[in-house]
Length: 176
Image 1 (cartoon, helix red, strand yellow):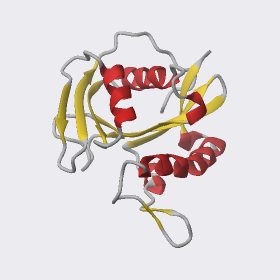
Image 2 (cartoon, one colour):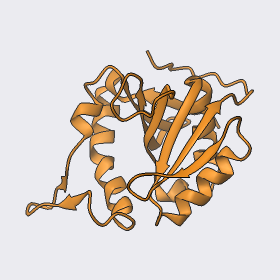
Image 3 (cartoon, one colour):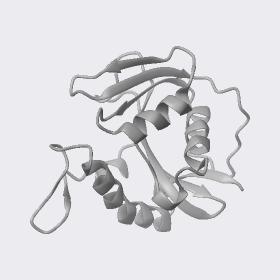
Image 4 (cartoon, helix red, strand yellow):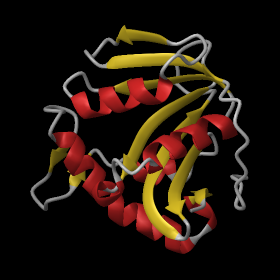
């Protein structure tokens, strides 16, 4: 089955899907994060960063599709950005696969496709309490070139690595 990464800004349907699914991601994340994201009195997550993701030229809001079914998303920052460590070109800020598609290999293939498309030095952070995500990323990154795993300033685990997957990945819908 064909995996694709689609710029959510290129399609009103993808943009709407991302907007509707993003709260599910925040809900899942809230299990591991006690302080940053909170529900307000109306039941909406705060802070809401999604509008900036859909507007900033150095951000890449991507919808992950398996065949034509939307199965997740990835939000990638590109330098220059205040959120990226010196020497890194990209930061994987958010990565989400819908629960029904987890443990099927889609997440691994989507991560490989991301790192193949955006080649260079990467950083990604995982909340220290998020053991499933830590296990996933350790499996994905394995012995990737230049891999460093460190503790971040907020207690998260920060991975820094060079994306050089050596795979041939072609997407019929390239990002910009």
